[in-house]
Image (cartoon, rainbow over all chains, first blue to last red; front, side, top):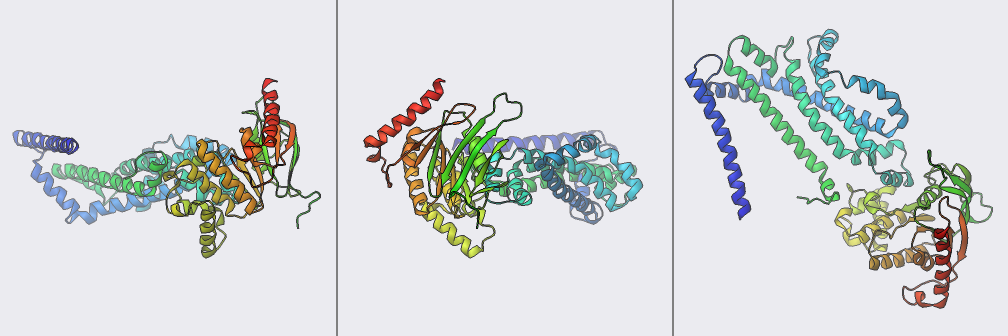
Amino acid sequence: MTNSVQRIRALSLQIMLIAGLLAIWQWAAVTFPGPTLPPLLAVWRSYWRLVQGDLLHTAVLPSLYRLLIGFLIAAVGGALIGLAIGCSRSLDAWSRPVLEYLRYIPAIAILPPALLILGPTDTMRIFVIAFGCIFPVLLAAIDGAKRVEPTFLDTARVNGLGAIARIRRVVLFAAMPSLFAGLRIALGLGLIMMVISELIAADNGIGFFILRSQRLFQSAGVYAGVLVIGTIGWLLTAGLLLVERRVLHWHRGWRGLPVD
Amino acid sequence: MIAETDGAILTVDNISRSYPGAPVPILDGLTFRQKRGEFVAIVGPSGCGKTTLLRCCAALMQPDAGSVLHAGQILSDPPPWLSIVFQDYNRSLFPWLSVKQNVGFGLAHVGKHERDERVAAALRAVRLDHAAELYPWQLSGGMQQRCALARSIVVRPKLLLLDEPFASVDAQTRFDLQDLVMEICRDMSLSTLLVTHDMEEAVFMADKVVVLSTKPARVVDEVAINIPYPRDQLATKETPEFLRLRHQVYTLVRQQIRH
């Protein structure tokens, strides 16, 4: 009983905060009319065009497509390479200097050379997104693979599993909690790289839409674009968490936490 | 057929093993033999290197000097006819697999139909058939160890290694598991190597008790246990013969601790 009362209270406070922020915005827009801060309704109209109307296909979907492809490449590639490195001491020693160097290059800095080599193409943008995403996944996979319970590996060896089978049937699963932590970070970075890659030599995508709106002094479009990015980030993270809960349902139980 | 000179399933011949950086070797010139079908228990003071010895006996680790022969051969990997039950079931049963999938883990090369049958039979043998669909972490410690036992016998091993398998469960469960293991080992005519710090358990279960010294571990003595099977938790443990042997093993181990 008290539990549900608390929940209703928390929910109403959350709603009040959002409503309060919107009210301040609207008040400021009405009190100081001008191009810097458009009224809520104008932003909403632009937002709706982005998620529902004509702009969906030229702004939102191209961005989403590139983000998802780049993220998937980074997730699969980072996991495979990372698990292999984490399982092999010689591979680890051999690749460490290169990885330690590459991981400190900000993904943004890779944009000009990527543009130089690949041109203003989808491939270039996907590459930049994948580059931004891959390091958290790679490092999480290496770390996860190194911290697999030694008894799991002994059990696998006693059951006749070779190196590849051990990675596929044991290390991959045991490292999954660590991998998902890496994927969550990667998704945030991917979102950043998605927007940035569309600010240079682009003709579609949300980043391009925001930039164009700003140049045309369509401030409602600028704000709507930013809000759409927030929405995409929120939805994708929720989706990832949902997948994580399904894949890692055993992990909570194993750690002695309540399973829902 | 495998070349066998003396019918031993396991020959540990003068093995030594050190860890890098450690001043004292952990195993030093350790020798014993296990005949086919024999139940051997290894006891020694805690921290004397029993687990290192077991890993060498499993071919999971190679000794620095000396040799371990599995049915007459030096192996670099565990043979398919060897299986292990580890002490810490929480770290050896895969938490992402159900009980059934855990038990069938080593049968990936076997067809699904046969695998299901063998898994079901192994689960029946350890009386865990009612929990096949659950996850290991949903079971009690004793049930998890029975699951680990089922996983190790489902591959039809000839040699079963037990690394302090009853150390993490309560006393009553320990007795039940001891009885179950002895029953299964006899039914399957397994050669069993039990590593334990529990001297009473060693005398109660084994044909032969190998007593180790403190670090570096050597064989101090071997005690033959000529008590007929089946052995009973109460009746056997009250016989003068059992008490005498327990006294003998206990004294040997205690001398090691004093040294």
